Length: 594
Image (cartoon, rainbow, N blue to C red):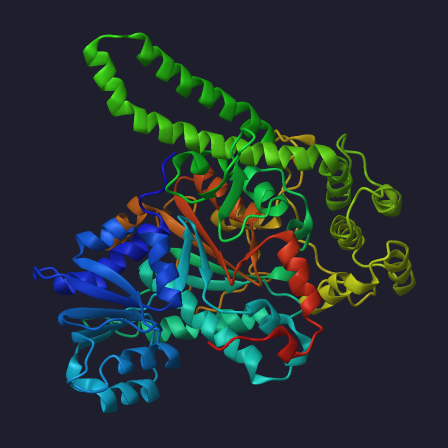
């Protein structure tokens, strides 16, 4: 399956084209484009340099850096409305005689505060031919996955040191504004609901999103309020399903990001042979094979990729067997394509074999314990009577590192809804993880019971029965969010646990059935054709297994597309480090400027 043409990346690129590049469609001259850190990442996610060339952009520069003047060319500034980016713009036009460019066309990703706007007006108003806000302040990470642009969001949401500060409310406000730019990009005005829980984070954010949506859609071009669309936005706090964050996942993408040192979606590997060179491969949706394999179980991947390699090499050999001139010329034309195909397959085979070597050496033994603790039943469906008995072999095994032991202890704690203080202290002492004990203790700040008490009895989500579904024994756990997505589409979410913020929520019709009483408006048929949309936002990070769930549910329910997003994407190691940092003072964590 090729990357979705109607995916988020495509929506963002189309919006950039219509909001920015169409302003210059009648012009024949080349232009320079200035970007800051956020817009550089944004563009790299949704287009290539060839796309920019097609729009008349000849050079892309960083607005923060010193650059050579090109006074005969116009410059397009696609920047965030921050002091640093605006200063970069102003520096380019301090005096008319020393202007770096012929004129500036400024496009802000978001609302520009009056203070910055007035600063621009006072400094270089005459050089600016256009100034516009385009409202895109999220990252389209994948075709159905988005993240926000908020540094240190996890610490700012959960740290007890910020509990009574304005920082916590400020970060929720920024989140709400960025989520609304996602809704606007998708042309949705969804009904907003949230999971009620021990904390008010989800309800606060849901109310802020609802208010910001109201303000944003107050008036369109015809000065009419945009009605609610047939879509839902569900907001969930990270503590809702802690199990999925620490469990070892055995599907390809989740397993690779958990076990291998993949950074910025880049996988490094060595070519075969004694003088093997180190190579890099970027894991992205332009790679059809990655899209096809990423959500498959590692057992299937290990079986499928060698078959594909065999097919590709047999095609090459078959072509080489025909020695006519025309056959050779055909082969020469196809060779680059075969080479590209084979090199992709080699990369993915490398990743799969890397994962399997880690799995065989250590992880396989862990997985059974983890699944039994997470589900409370063993592979035969028998109830686990004594969780501590299941946990102990992992803690006593010297070949498991402390991270894996911490993950197992956490699964034990989650499964028993907390443990006693005495038991926790003993576990930490015996496993000798005193220096990392905050990776366990600090889950209380996410409203997950670590020490059991009557107050802390968490209301567990009622799970769907999946006993009839075919699964691998070491992959029996299903992220809770998948149940939520399916229940939402089938209209089975209890409105007491999942209240709406919207005063008049839209008629939700995720499963595609239209009631006879509900008379469709003219535009409604258009909406049905493209299907309803369910947007799920998780405060505090989303896991790769939860991302996979969005695609699986969209595939199963053709009438509804599920889009999932969060402040950032989690791997178990990253999450444990972030949980550990919660008890540190603010300056040690170094919260970056917006």
